[in-house]
Length: 339
Image (cartoon, rainbow, N blue to C red):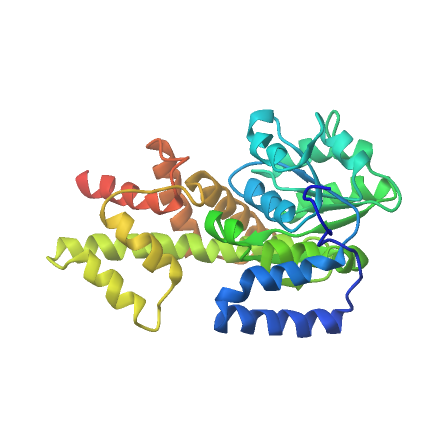
């Protein structure tokens, strides 16, 4: 096991009605008694028994896997660059050199990859996870991809006899570290119930949305809104400064009004200082806007605001800001002002 003593992970399936009640009570608890978070997570973590695989130790995958290890789960990890797994190995995680070997040695395997191409390659490519899957195993893709990609991976997984669940997350680096992610799941409902306790270790709430593709669609809509909000917020900060207002005061005013958002209050002060510590890379925000535009096109739904925001993020990428936080999109607007 990853930690000495009694494991906190034992599997006991949850009914959908129990999920709804638990999710509601958990959200209330987190809002009213945040200091009880670690105790609550440990309690929820008692429901899974088996080995858990995790593929992808990036800005999101690493803290998610770490939370599973802290909860006492038997975790096996993989990353293209093994050194990114070292801190988890030192805490008791196992390491396997390929996704196929992780999936073969684990009961359930999670994957958190950067984009659709990476998600497909890790799942179905050479030494991909599907080569280690089989009847009774589960594959949970928590990457942000489009519905077509999710369905492609699902088909490959199901051909092995394993079960598939898409579970993209709403939340960035800090929520991942704090176990405060929101899971937007779709696919095999039995697998959803089976891994519910693991999702509760890594997140504050979870939603089951039905057929594969619905989770991906929900995540793209959420991130489309977020990207557009950040672009508009950036315009507001620059306009306030241009007319002689203190942008820091604008952040405070916004944080106390009807349009208050943690995103504004957390990122606004750093944006005023032109610093963009990465919680959600700008290149990923632009990727999600691109995928959202594709989703909208597939149903003939115009999204002109998101389309305009996408162009702004593309400008920011061309300025070398891809790996900065997505709040660095404000620099693209600054460049427009200078021109």
